[in-house]
Length: 558
RNA sequence: GCGCCUGUAGCUCAACGGAUAGAGCACUGGGCUUCGGACCCAGGGGUUGCAGGUUCGAAUCCUGUCGGGCGCGCCA
Image 1 (cartoon, rainbow, N blue to C red):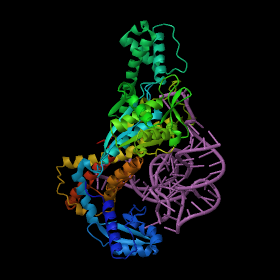
Image 2: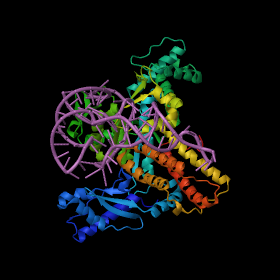
Image 3: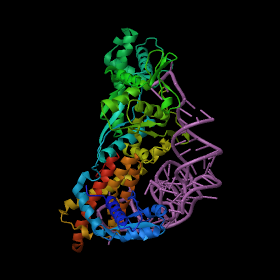
Image 4: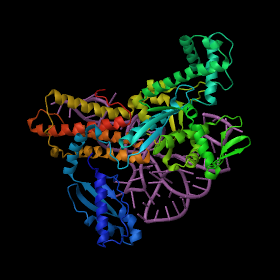
């Protein structure tokens, strides 16, 4: 990867500040942190810094004076064509055309690795997401987290980190017991025996389907077993089938995991006991009212939480603590990112408290809360409930809307906003989804390159210094933003910038396409054609990278 | 009642404390005898819920207020 323009500019400013300080041109004690931005208005240059405005107070010097002093210390050079100041105290930078042109070569050279960064401090990161109980198929409500998590994981990887994508399978606990009992009841029913769905049991049709499937594959032998044994064995099969289905559904959306971590293994491996012992040693556990409590109130939570019920059964929270002990201590992840729905927001403080009590800096646990998705069909709100069996499955959604459009829709919104998902609108407008606009750009390029190859054109000798058209330069400028974006997203954990960027990049390409003819039979145009083919090939790489990072396909034709 | 999130164009959403608040869809009107029209150009549409405050500068930060979502179990 070539150095990023932004880093070059920051380095220049830092150098200027250092000189201003050492030569006493500005009364600076230390060199302040430099931030640059991309001005919204391109007339203000490629980069700008408002540092003089920030320094005005502490130095007691007028912002414009500081700006001018700094600008004078930054003469034009190989990368920067012009440095100038603007009121009330900005310093603006314009990149040199020759430098921009050369970046096309740099991108081609980087190839598919363009946009993949090398970080000075690579970390071992886990992204845990979806983690829905395997008590039923995955539904639309889970789609947002799935898309968010998988994209974030890709971006963190591109930013140079080592990433593990993990699904926590809650294969223990009361909800699972209830599910097993529900499947058992349907199984007995299918055999024509009297059976009652347990109260609060799972009513969805899929439960019956599952029971009948098991019946046809395994026969009726569970009917004659002791109830307890039957629930155990039948339950295991039902769970495995459910997990397989979830796996398959997620795969259709382009989401896959490196690890499927079973809650039960925490108990089997002894890690659960180890965790409790650890907490006990630290004095974080207290026996009260017949139960064992974790003293989270003193750690900032609004109340203490039960770890072991008076019945002797551990709570979900207990195994969650053991799970995070496993993540941080046994598997030694530097950072753990959990993606949760807004309905789990109340658990953030207590889990962070627990992690802290285990001797791990709670800042290493980052919990991203994605707000709820309200599912609608026109004006009507569709209720989603697994227990009552009233829901739209992820599979139905993906089949209807398509995985790419589906991903785009969820990805383009920041996690903090509540969304309305109108099934009617999504289906009707899926063909107008911006993702096709982006993919169309990619396909158009593929078509041009194809045609050029058919004509036997070899553009390796193309001279990029011929790329002077404003449309060409605008396209290059957009292409250069991708690495910056990858870095920014990996720090702020906000992947929603990526689809917006991809759209802008595609716009820049379509604009170029409209105004700059690539292939031509005119002999006088030949050199320009070669240069433009280079640009187009590089643009395709960048578009493809953006699409790939978002987990979308890169069609050659549509 | 308390906690977290949220309110921006007709709709769905962007905007790292920065310069004239931007996109897509929808609407109106234009644009190819040559590389893919799933494209391009132009236009209308905004007191950023409201009121104060901080700042050279606020959609963004602080306080208050009104509206929406989600939590506040020995459920997961």
